[in-house]
Image 1 (cartoon, rainbow, N blue to C red):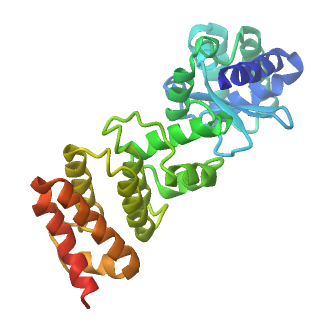
Image 2: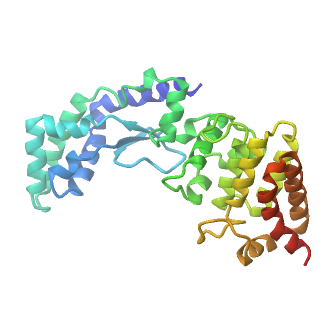
Length: 319
C-alpha cells in the first residue's frame, strides 16, 4: 500500500535535505521562527514541525504548520532542528545574538542564520525516524492526526480517514475542511453508497448511516438526501437490523437538527421541527414515514419514539 510510496518519498527528501546547495531551506526556516519570536523560550516550545514537499518542483520548506494544498506532500518531522538551539551552545548564542540585533544589521543577522543553518544541515539525519517501521494502520493514524498528507492515501483509505474525522466530536471540524480534501467528491460518493469499513466506535452495523447523519449536520449533504439515504439503508438492511439497532437509529433521528432544535436540550416536536420538514419534498417525507412505520413494526418496544418522529411528519403531510 502507501507505506512503500511514503518511504520512497522520504527517501527522495532526505538526500535533498543533506545537500549543502540546499542550505537556503534551513536559512529560511530559522529566519522565519527567529523573526517571529520574541525570545528563545517561545522557540523552544515549538513541538510541531512539518516538511512540505512539492514533488513536481522538488521545492522543500520546513514549517510549523502543515500545508493545506493538495499538491504538497507534508509529513510531521522530528524536532531535531529546534532541539539544536537548546543543545548546541554555539547555536544558542547565535540565535540569542540574532534576536538582539537591530533589523538594519542585515549582514550580521544573515551570518548568524547561516551559522545555525549549517549546523542544522550537518546534524540532519532523516525527516521522520518512525515511518519505515509503520504498518498500514500506523499510516492511517498518522493521517488522521494531521501528521501526514491525506492526498497520499488510496481512495478506500481516504474514505476510512474521512469517516473517522466525521465521527470525531471534538474539535468540531468545519464543512470547508472536508470540501477541500483531495478527492472528496469520490469519498462522498462512496459514503452515499454505504461503502465504508464497518468497524466503528459507535455501532459496526450502523456506521454508514451515522456518517451520513454527520455529513448532513455539517451541510455536506441536504436534509432531503439524508432522509432518502436513511430509508434506502433501512430497506437494504431490513433483515439484518436488530431491535437494539432500531432503537439506536431512532434515537439518532430524534437528535438530528431536523427534529431537535439545537437551542433546546431534548427532543420535542415543535414549530421548529415543522419548519425543517417543510423544506423537504413530500415524496421524501412519505417514503421516510413508511420507513419509520416499518421500523416500529419490527421493534414494538420503540413505538413511542417512532410515533414522536411520525407526529410532526404527518402534520406537515396533512397540510
